[in-house]
Amino acid sequence: MRLFSLLISLFVAFGSFSQSEKDTSSGEINLLFIGDVMGHGPQITTAYDKTTNQYDYTRCFKYIQDEISGADYAIANLEVTLAGPPFTGYPQFSSPDELAVGCKNAGMDILVTANNHSCDRGGAGIIRTIYVLDSLNIIHSGTYKDSVERAANTPLMIDHDCFRLAILNYTYGTNGIPFPAPTIVNLLDKDLIAKDLAVAKTKNADKIIAFVHWGNEYESLAGSWQINMGKYLFEQGVDIIIGAHPHVLQPMVWEKQTADNGEESLIVYSLGNYVSNQRDRKKDGGAMFKLTLQKDKEKTSIKSAGHILTWVYTPVEDGAKKYYVLPCSKYENNPEFFDSEVSYNQMKLFVSDSRKLFQENNKNIGEYIYENEKWVLKY
Image 1 (cartoon, rainbow, N blue to C red):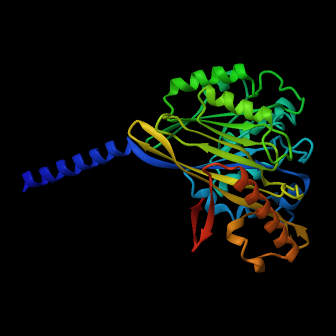
Image 2: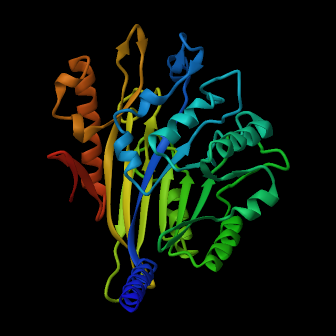
Image 3: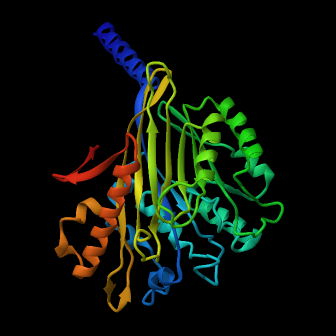
């Protein structure tokens, strides 16, 4: 009996070891990229709860939380500072810390912080934003307290099961406000990028991802500067580029591997607004970009890529304007959900504009459609 038990133990141990070995050499990871998380004045006002004397952003993500939390890693652009009071919106943003709490509770794992509003409250704002994110155990990249912190965290490395990913974050500028020493904001400087990518290549990353803040505001097509900078990033070794800043959607292009070329690249020029108070046509929504990577031993490749259109719904409830991020496909055939026909038609116009843009300009990128209580990728 003892011999039989020993053999069973060895079999179980060996089986576990083999499965472990298998898990370290193959698998899949789901990444979700989210555009501009803004904090305009009206958003701050409505987030304040007079009964508790506290700010609360939980409701903002209540209709989209399942989609966010379903990813292995959800990565968003935090386009505000968490610099403390007085809380202000445009043009120099400082949102309550509870905005970051709301992002985390909704399932966002990583916030990139290099954008044109990083310096809105100077060096103190940069530092306090970092401290708040650290206190909430939110992973972040793009701004740093000093060069020591930057050297220790560039690139940001994500290890998940068999995957090892490198993430870099840069901005075209900071609205003319310099970052004071010793703080640092990553700028889209070619020499800096080349140095960072040289380091990234020593980290044995399966994929190198750059989340960049660039482009002309409110233009639906990428400008020549964006296109050329994207080519430079690819030439330097970046595999995937995710863009933000224009506050409207821009095209997505996946150049797949071919028989003669083992390399692939993917670029999303702009994810648009995720949540903001911008209500004009094309500015009132954006897209979440879902990317599935697969690994087979030493080879990592893109398995699938698609977007979920999102729209900011702003009904008046209890006498105050509220902000809800909606996954459009769940609600585009449900007019009864909306407070008015005007709101419903506004979302439908955003969906129509976005699909037309993508159908004419996207390459190898599908849309996730909600059917029979599940998301289906359609091309």
